[in-house]
Image 1 (tube, rainbow, N blue to C red):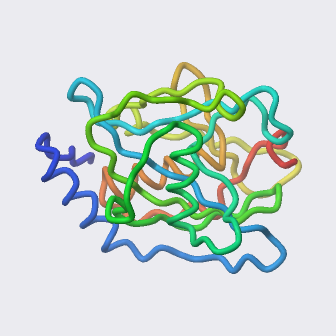
Image 2 (cartoon, rainbow, N blue to C red; image 1 turned 90 degrees about the vertical axis):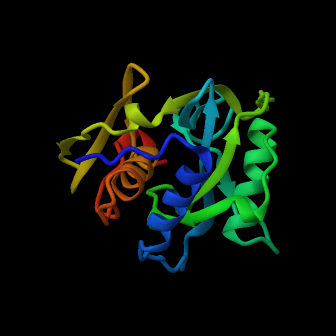
Amino acid sequence: MSDPLPTDPGEARRRVADRLGRFPAVEIPPQDRRPASVVVALASEDGTLGVWVTRRAATLRAHAGQFALPGGRVDPGEDVRSAGLRELREELGVTTAESDVLGRLDDYATRSGYVITPIVVWVGEAPRLAPNPAEVAGVDLVPLADLDVEPRFVRIPESDRPVIQLPLLDTLIHAPTAAVLHQFREVVLRDRHTRVADLEQPVFAWR
């Protein structure tokens, strides 16, 4: 059963940080994969707390047009936190501090050769966004009530792992974004330690 976050922003932030602090996130050694970071950014618009989901620009070489979370590869000299905060600033024009990072979720290894580390960042009252058109075709704030949705699982002949689909934004969102958002829902909204490493991406996202 869902346990809604408090309406008071300070209490909500503490609740999220507490649940993430009790969650034993699993790290995956990069080995031959490249480290990357994505941000689950908690922002409030008109009193509604939600998470920003972007749609990647059609001109990008990889995963063009797909739904995503702000993020990208970890550059030399960065850790996953600093990389995620940099990507949030570069993609959406939103500046946050290290102290706004409330915790992290499990690493997720992608078919395209990355190990993604999701970090959860508190933004609070949403500033005016300045999406980078070279990277972002659109951005939506998905209310937490909409994130508290049951996923769909389908089978494909190319893998023995179930493909996750999240019915959001009048469409179906796939892994890795769907896997991260589903685990966020389980850990933060339902206080359940659910793993997602075995959830598959659709074949179109393997490249």
